[in-house]
Length: 293
View 1 (tube, helix red, strand yellow):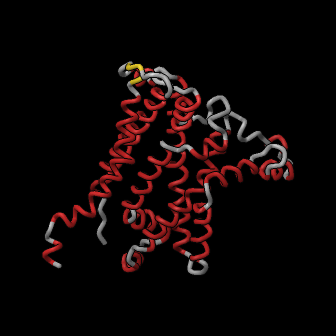
View 2 (cartoon, one colour):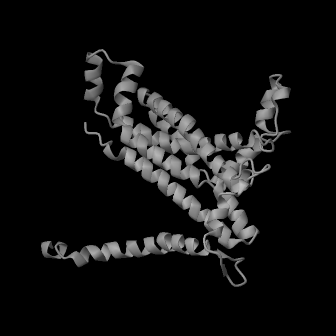
View 3 (tube, one colour):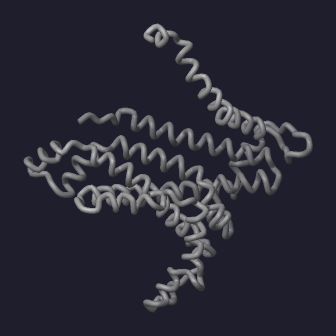
């Protein structure tokens, strides 16, 4: 057995299939997308090599720049609103003694619901005539507050962000809660002896100790919001007037509806580069964030 484990071919036997799959489904599509981005091509006729024209055109494409801004809006909302909310709810659940399992299950339920179902559900809630939100507003005398939530260019993105937050924060709450509950009780007891308790304990002890998990949450949030597609596609399809257009929906329209596969591939490559830079920057910041109890 020991002789077998010392043989490097044994390890290669397990690693090579994974590397092949990684290369086939990740490396190869990226390379092909970059190559297609160098051509003007409709997917049917012969490709015409145009160099980096597709990539340089992105810098002057008003819709692409707007979609990029919408992606950053998506990311900023998630970082400023969702992450603090996740931390607050996780701390509150960690403090309760009764029904903690029920609260954990309750916040996690939306995570297991498909994005299509969530988008349809919130589409019904946002309906101007029969939607629950406008019905409640009318019931309490707020008729003037009733809105076309998904048709108003100023409210459509915010409406999507709320639906997206409702679906996804449960996963992060469970992740954050696991980190909080994993902190040794002795640390909390020692803090109380030193007179540190309540929110001071949360801010000065709990938050620093779960910082690596918080960085993982930041990493997943940044990458997820920059490549968001399904919920936007189903709820508004990028409208109205490109107010909810994001890079992925724009790439989809350009590539498969306008049949500009070269330009659509260039958008995909731009998304890949932006996500790579953002995640690399975050990983560099979090490199020295190892915590030992």
